[in-house]
Each structure stands twice: as C-alpha cells, then as structure tokens.
Length: 366
Ligand code: SF4
Image 1 (cartoon, rainbow, N blue to C red):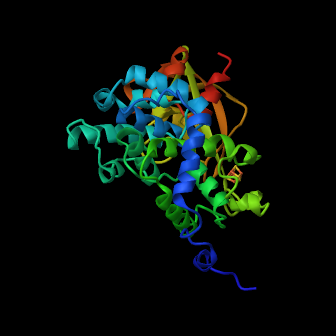
Image 2 (tube, helix red, strand yellow; image 1 turned 30 degrees about the vertical axis):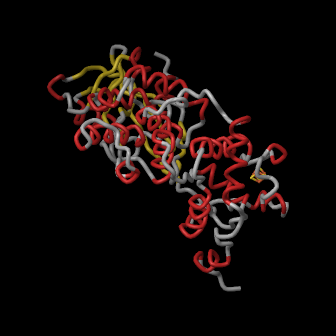
Image 3 (cartoon, helix red, strand yellow; image 1 turned 45 degrees about the vertical axis):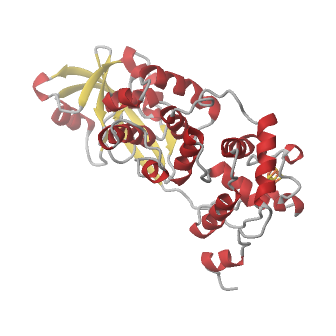
C-alpha cells in the first residue's frame, strides 16, 4: 500500500470544528479545577509576570516537585527583573545548574536584558510582545498572559496535547505540524470567555495528574463522558508516539586536570551543547593528552589514569564520555588561556557545570 503523506493523513483526521460544545468542556475543567486542581503552588496567587514567567520557563520539560526548590533559590537571588537583567550570565547558569536544558536559563537572562532595553524594565502585557522575547513560544506566552493579565489565550504544552488528542481522538504524532494544527484549533476554540485562569490551570493539572502518559485516571476525569479515546477503548493509541529513530552514538575524551585541590575548567562557547557552562576540556580524536595539556593550558602532565566512563543522553544523540584524570606536575602561569579557570574542588557546588561533568567530578577520590 503506498505511504500516505502526513498532510493527506491529517485531512482524514477529525477537524476541530463541531466536536463538542466548547462551553461544556471549559465548564467541566473549571469546576474540576476549583475542587481537585492544584492550589497554593509557589507561583500561584500572584499577578507578577516576572514570577509567572520564571515558573513557566522552569516547568518546561521539568516536573513541579523538581522546580520548587530552584524557583525559591532563584527568586531569593533575583527578586525582580532588574536584578536578573543586571546579573552575570555565569551566576544565572550556576543557579540553574542541575535543572538541565540550559538554553532556558540563557534565554531567560537575554529576555530580562531585552525587557530592560526595549520595555523600560517593565514586563510587556501584550501577547505579541511577550512572544517576541527569547525562549518564549506560543503556549508559554499564552500561559503568562492568562495568569498575569487574565487574557484569553490558548495553551498547548505537551501534557495538554495529550489531553486533547485523547479527548477528541486526534490521530498522529503531535510533533507533526499538521497534527499540531488540529490540536491548536481545539485549544483555540475551547478557551472560555471567563474563568480563563482556572480553565488554563485545570488543563495543566489534568495533564499532569489525571490524563497521565501511562495509567490515566479516567474514573476521576471530568472529561470522561466526552472522551473519544475512552469511548473507543483506545487510550494507548493517543497521542501517537514520535516515529522511532535510532539516536547516533558519539564518544569524547575529557581531561580532568588536578592541581593543589583544584580542577581546570574551560568555558564552553555560548551556542551549542552546554553553551556558556564550565566544562572539562575535550580532546579531539587525534590529540594526545600530554600535548594538549602543555600547548593549550601551559600544564605539565604527571600521572594519567582512566576514570569510569559516563554516558549522557541528548535529544538528538547519545554521548559516551571517557574521562582521563591527570595529576599536574607544573603550571606555566604565562600560558594561562582566556576562558579557563582553576576551580577549587570545594567550590564545585555553586559552579555552572553540565550534569555529566558534575557526576565525573563528584566521583573523584581526591
Ligand atoms: S477520560 Fe481518560 S483518557 Fe480521556 S481525557 Fe480523561 S483521563 Fe484522559
């Protein structure tokens, strides 16, 4: 049978029109949220767009329980937009260290500076202006405008895509543009004229706690009477998973240069993986550790030993890291390279390090 294009398949999918009364849907979500939804999260009960924005960015790809301590720590240090805009990027990244997806932190910092320059330090209150800020997509801009200003906008994060795909029987992988379009049509038509905050929070709460990826609690779901996936006993089919792809495997060697209780770290370029973080120097395939130590860092290598391999998964590839521990004999201070620091091992906690580098250094027997 000839393969059908995604567009042709999407054409067969139900349109978002006439697939349930929007008012009923929203009323059910709002009523459920008032009684069973989450209340009292640290970023609720405020209209401060800065705090709401921070929470929305931290909550991308990260669960509430993991975000709460980071959110509190971040706000203790950067209480408002002005404090964040004035900060050094290193400090922002250090406070983010461990949450992952560091581009979120870099964009947050860039956006704070952009707001200082273009909006006189006041968080914009128009959807289009919010959407223009670095690191803010359509759903995040909508959530900020809903919670900060009570504006009527539709959200569609990963969890909400799952709820809509099941409730309205939207086939196909939501990462497909054509499928996403259908889901957005549903999201847009369902936004209620009032109680938009409770409705939006309700969708988030349903996606996080009831219509979960595995074992959804349909018995507790306010949408169960109209849910297509439940009616057809086909919940496992929605949403369709990402088409399988074998991730390429990469390998790198990293130098763990130790001297007088310190380790040498190198700042990574702003773009690319771990952009702007402090990391261990990497060796190219044809480079020898002795030569790199001397020519790049002015360091005379002593004893070299292999540390246990560390594996790390990125969205697009898997990385095996082979760390080489080097006891440094001598440092030539004339060859201290820019973007390089000798950091005391006792200060690793507060440094902006990629997670696998932190794991390597935490396992050192010093
Ligand atoms: S009835 Fe079940 S599958 Fe349908 S939206 Fe509710 S929790 Fe999800």
